[in-house]
Image 1: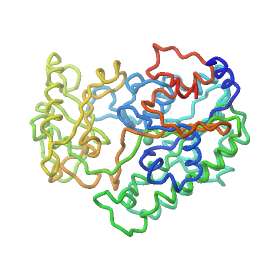
Image 2: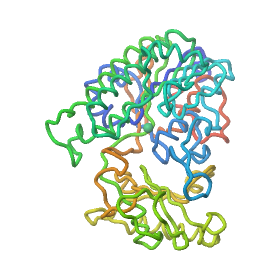
Image 3: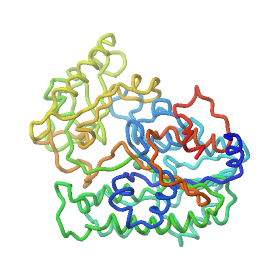
Length: 477
Ligand SMILES: [Zn+2]
């Protein structure tokens, strides 16, 4: 029986519509009745929460999904990384940092053709056999080579009338401008998606839309009545509905174009929720005696520009959705002071403090989590931090800047932003030929997607080299 189904699948297509940052609370609850296409897929297909990786961030999450490997194996812990153990040099992850094979690479070796539209990090576009690739939102500009094969670029530009939009500028106060560009960008993405589906041969299609993430970051406080800064009757109160509805229409068209022989997945890389504030991790480390300045910062200062006294500094941290914490280790950092044999005990001591002694702005204990990368992932390659800390169940961002009057900020220190990421993304599978009854699946994890897809194409997945598991319920549905 199982064999029969696997064989049948081998002759069918699979399409993934990737919606960055979409939480089940919005798509499957609040807005479901306003989204006729998603609702139909939800009621006739299979759905569930897709638990994301640590950290729940776009880069590495899509690569975890498409390789089946955890961030430790990928050696990718966020967008930006420290270069080795130097104090001030860093780099932004791009496609060349991903060494593991993606689903479309494996399929290409098997002679199957893929369309890959915007999966991050997708710039610079890799040359992969049997793949038509358009790079992602980290692409610096339209002038760069952003497709594989290179001549595909002209087709993308023609479809988008000379202006393809990779991303919007979203951490600004000009909300009207963000809104306009957001809708324009997403419409163009779906125009290109439709063009590729109609004009290129494919067995596997995958696209990514960053617009949801930008909508959430720029407008969360306007449409979420539970957000502390929400004001009833504001002009963007229903913008979530407006945007989700527009995309729902485009998804409906796309699924029709996929045809009756295509199995469609709608997936997100993590969820979103309202931000409570930002916790100033470096100011706290200073208060606890871990960090010292030669000259105290005058005004708000980036930690990399602060005048740190390394001879008295044991640890410092980075801002973002979570705090990356680095220790100043003798023989490892240029001016290290911690004896390498004390590093493990120092990590434990600081992790205990973060877990047990940090309170929020109202004096309540913060629900923090601290991870040590090697323990969390089994193996942690690349430029990993010594500790990873989540503040207040990720409701508090980490602020890396120093020179604030308080440990608690109620604005993001890198520009207007009112949402953070959460651990649950969405999973939706739809087969136009069959009614699967709208069943909910539980225990779905982001690293399970790649092995499940490969198994559906009849490709054996080596169990020891991959962190995910084949979702048998999905393969056999
Ligand atoms: Zn994301």
